[in-house]
Amino acid sequence: MARILIVDDAKFMRMTLANILKKANHEVIGEAENGKEAVELYVELKPDVVTLDITMPIMSGLEAVKEIKLHDPDAKIIMCSAMGQQKMVVEAIEAGALDFIVKPFDESRVMEAIQRVLQ
Image 1 (tube, rainbow, N blue to C red):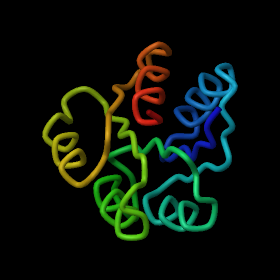
Image 2 (image 1 turned 180 degrees about the vertical axis):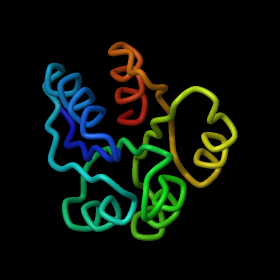
Image 3 (image 1 turned 45 degrees about the horizontal axis):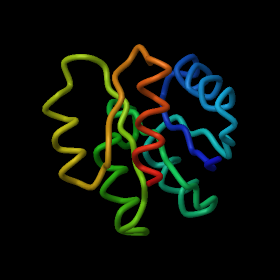
């Protein structure tokens, strides 16, 4: 069971992801709707895993990955992206994200990504 921080500017996406994770007995310890909140909550809550949307207001997921990695080089981050954002996903992986999941979320793919980063 992992302690997970969910970051997405769309409440519906956060709810969808939270439901998938809770069903698998993971604990959602926080939610943020932009990269700035994500960094603040990461530092405060020290989650095991972060799911991070790429396109968000105030601070993008890409900027948030870099910022979180400055605070914790071992942070386990999974990027969430819509189709067609491959270039940004590659940049996020290069910045330190460990995996990515595509929206709309496929439950088995979400669980696979979580298991992979926790190993």
